[in-house]
Length: 143
Image: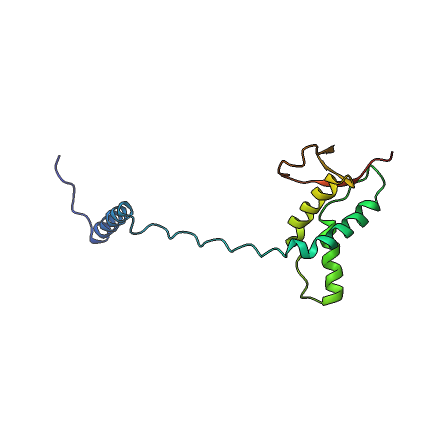
C-alpha cells in the first residue's frame, strides 16, 4: 500500500497530540485528579447531654397521640431545636444532628415498654437488629 497524500500541518499536529494524549493516559500522567475527600459529618452532640431532653420530648409527642396513631421521630429533634432557638438564638444546633440520639432513645423506650417502633405499619420485633429506613413511633396499645 502506498502512503496517501501528505497531511497538512494542522492535521499532522492534531494526530501527534492525540497520540501523545493516548500515551500519557496509558502512563497515568494525565488521569483526572481524584475527587476531593468528602467533608466530615458535623459532630453529633454528646448523647448523654441530650438524652433526657430527647426522651422527655419523645414521651410528650407520643403520649399526645391516641393508639394507633404514630409520630415521626424527626418531630422530636425539630421541637428541641425550636426550643433551643427560642432560648439561645440562632446559634442553636441543627435538628439533624440529633437524629441518631433520637433513634437510640426510641429503642431504649421501646425496650422499656413505653412505646412501639413500627416500620411499614408493623411493629419492629427485633430491636437488637440495626434499624434501617424510616421508622414511626406509636404509643403502646390500651390494656
